[in-house]
Image (cartoon, rainbow, N blue to C red; front, top):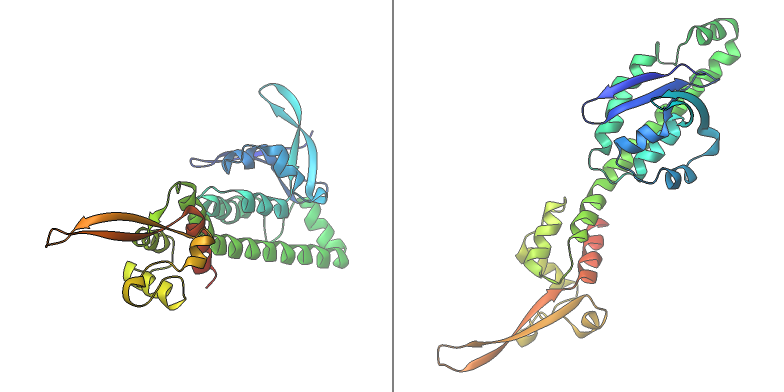
Length: 253
């Protein structure tokens, strides 16, 4: 049975880590998914590289069980799949605290590894090449998480969007998720890009083609003028489909 080392964090709980036959850290998949609040471990496993998956006997409260462990590259793939806002913090904890505590001299330096490096220069080159690849994977993971942050925020905002909203409300959603824009500037952008009319009675009224696309709806009402005459009002509202459409527009600008 493999030696298991447990790393604890108040925010993420316990992560069981062992060492593979080729002296690489392997992370218990169940623990990782629990920390990242990923409920379906089976679905996650299907998306991982088989080369970085090992089943290892692990002592648990219920006795020795075969548990799934994953390598560092697959760990980052798990992080990609998490919608938990703290996923980046989890990655930082693993990389800045967990891995340094089980690595020496920039590699996973078990006694056997050190002997191999001293006795076999070719093996040393292979180890350092692997380290380089791991660091590149980490950098890719960090860049992806930062790039996806606005998208995750937008997705979370849209999850609560069940009805149409005013254009001013859409501006607030966009601003809260990284693209600063006020109501007036959003109206101006929509007019300049042909979504809303520019002049006269059609000013700020959605153009028909975008109503037909399902991006807008027009809420009609009446108001009483100073002369007591009732006037028809038209208020543009952005549908749920339209919110998704414009959020993606601003995300990809």
